[in-house]
Amino acid sequence: MKFPKGKVAFLVTRNINKFNEAKLVLAEFGIATAMLNIEAIEIQNDDLEEIAKTSALDAAKKCNLPIIVEDAGLFIKALNGFPGPYSAYVNKTIGFNGILKLMEGITNREAYFESVIAYYEPGMNTPICFHGRVDGSIALEARGESGFGFDPIFIPSEGDGRTFAEMETEKKNEFSHRAKALRKFAEWYKKHF
Amino acid sequence: MKFPKGKVAFLVTRNINKFNEAKLVLAEFGIATAMLNIEAIEIQNDDLEEIAKTSALDAAKKCNLPIIVEDAGLFIKALNGFPGPYSAYVNKTIGFNGILKLMEGITNREAYFESVIAYYEPGMNTPICFHGRVDGSIALEARGESGFGFDPIFIPSEGDGRTFAEMETEKKNEFSHRAKALRKFAEWYKKHF
Image 1 (cartoon, one colour):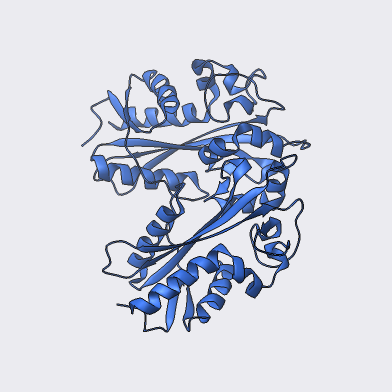
Image 2 (cartoon, chains in turn cyan, green):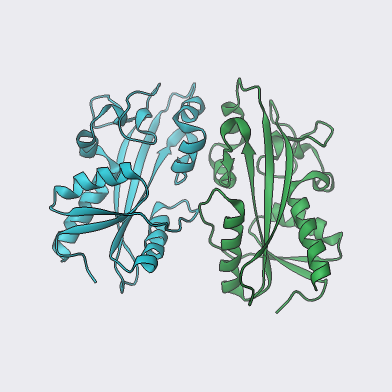
C-alpha cells in the first residue's frame, strides 16, 4: 500500500501544532495531510532518527497504513545538548523558563532545532528518514505567543532577530527544522511515486 | 525456566554502580546477583513502571532468561517532577549543577527518588513490579563523592542530614528507593519459589 498518488500523507501525532505546521508545508507540494491520532512507542535514545524509526514501525503495526512520524529536539551547546530528544517532557516540567534559568550568565547561547521525519509503508524493511536543522540562539527572555514548545526562546540565525513565537506559522516555516525535513520528504515522495 | 532456587538474580544493566548496590541488598537474602550487560529498549514514558516493564520484556526476548530490570528517577516537586524518568540523560547533560541552578531561590526543596524493579521470566504474561521510594530534599550545594547520579544533592528525610553521596553504599541501602524495591522483590521471590 502506498500514499494515494500525490494526495495525502498520514502524520502520526497527537500534537495539533505540529500537525498544523506540517499541513501548510506539505500543501506547497499538493499533498494533503491527515492527522493520525494514535499512540506510538517512543524510545529513550540520544539519536532522533532511532526514536522516529522505532515510532514509525510501531505506528505502522497498529494501523497498517503508510505513515510519517516526526521527532524533534532543541539542542543547546552550553548545556551539552540538553534538552535534546526529551524536549517535550522538559517543556512540560521546567518549561522555557527553566531553560532561561539554566542559561543565566552563559554567554554562548548557540542552539539548534533538529527534526527527523520517518516514512514507513507496510512491506518496507526499514523507514526512510529525512532531516532538517535550523541554527540559532537562545533569547535572553521569552518573546511572542505563536507556535509551541521552546518557540518563545529560540531565535533562528537566518531570521531578523524575532523568536519563532513572534512569527506567523508561514514565516516560521521559511526557517524551521520541521519544514526543512518535511520539504525533503515531499520532494522524495513526489519523485518516488 | 526459573531462577535457580534462591541462588541468583540476573540484573539487566550497564550501570556498575546500580549493580553494586543491588548485589549488596540481594545478598542479605542469600541471592547472588549476576550483571547482564545487554541493551534493552527504554521507552519515553512518565511512568517508571511502564518503562521497566517494556525493558524487561525486551531483554527477556534477547536472552531467554528470568531477569530483573530496574528503572529509577528523581522527582522534584517545585520542578513539576523534573528530571523524573529522564534522570540519566539530564545527569549526563546539565548534571546536578544544572539542578542546583534550577533550584536557586526556591524554598520548597522537596523531592523523592523512586525505583521500580520489573521481574520477568519466559512464559509469564506480564512482568511483576516492585516499587521503592525515598522522600527527601535537594541540598543547597553538592556534598560527597560516593554513589552516582544525583546522590550528591539528595538528602533523605530519614537520615542524619548527609546526602546519599556522603554515605557508604551500606548506609545508602538503609534508606534508598532502589534497596526498598529490591527487598520487596527478594521477599516475594523467596516465598514464590
